[in-house]
Image 1 (cartoon, rainbow, N blue to C red):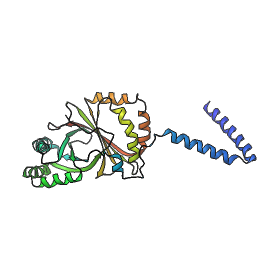
Image 2 (cartoon, rainbow, N blue to C red):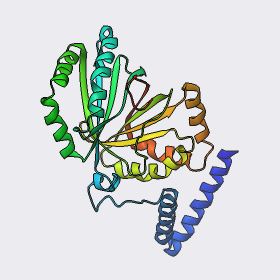
Image 3 (cartoon, rainbow, N blue to C red):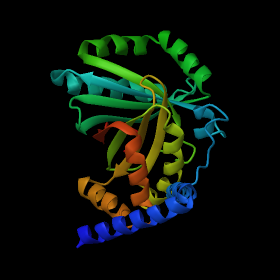
Image 4 (spheres, helix red, strand yellow):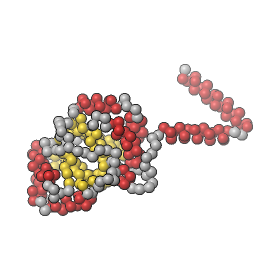
Length: 282
């Protein structure tokens, strides 16, 4: 039946085109149809909130009321050393977090449960941006306990990498949470030039995903792998994660966010993480 309908439509369009060609009006109609299609397409998109031509992406998307810089560390640990590595971190990292001489805070520290195995993830916040980061690095070089920690840590690692991040303006700042929780770090490698578009869609999407207080923090890279986005979520367990994510599809606008943001992604990855004992995010 659908085939017959399409055939009838095609025949009708051809007849109309022939009549209009005879009268010289076909160009106007084609242009009119093109304009209608373009108008419909643009109406289907979200209204842009940010003009990417006016400033650097970091200035447009990051919070302006503070000057926080974040660092995420990924440490791939030798499987036989993971327990010893965790104890070493628990002995040293909280002391840096608690020392007022260091303008930095340990936001969270985890072991990956599902995803890349035998991996530790640490998230630090530097209040004061790059100057605070430089100050902390200089002071740590003079900290004998930290230098001993680095030497011992090096013997336990297979590889390590880090990124410097800024926080999206429309996400809440990560704050300590009571537990027990599991955490999901969803990482997206975007196509270059699409960060503004991603931010515009998620500025609306985060309102949908905040209803269960599962949103912890949202970040985008400045140094390291570029055009990378990290979304950090907290759930009571894997089943509550499944229930909350499924419920989002029943809320108006979520399907459109997924539809329009998926084409912006080159690669995506999910880690389910368990907090270490010393993590402020329990």
